[in-house]
Length: 139
Image (cartoon, rainbow, N blue to C red; front, top):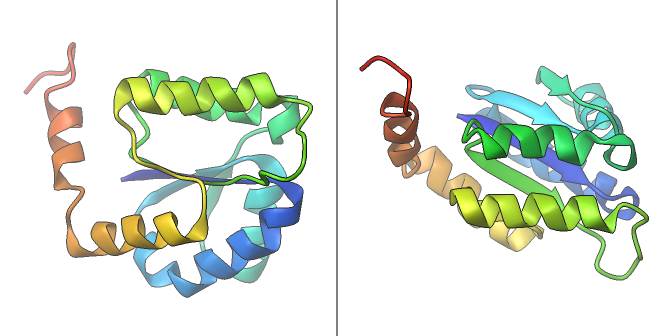
């Protein structure tokens, strides 16, 4: 599965702790993140993460491009609801794309934990069918 991690500044430590707790689940998947979030996770885990630009510099949109192409399977986006973000339109566009494409998106640790436990149980096998029968892909 293709999994992305995004965290606003005041949520980065929470994201790192979350990923540390579930490192054993994430190690078998292809991981992506926005810049600083990915760096912080890699510094404290043994995970390899493809890092895009930081969110305000277009990282949210780069992940959004994968969502638009239905290439992302799960996103954990720990947003800071109490702080205005200068790139709010990019954030809203990413959230909207996830809704359009039916991509599971957690915006808090409680929801993220439920999704990761489902991932660990194999409940995301339906995403493999999405990739297998994607238009333009030989079956």
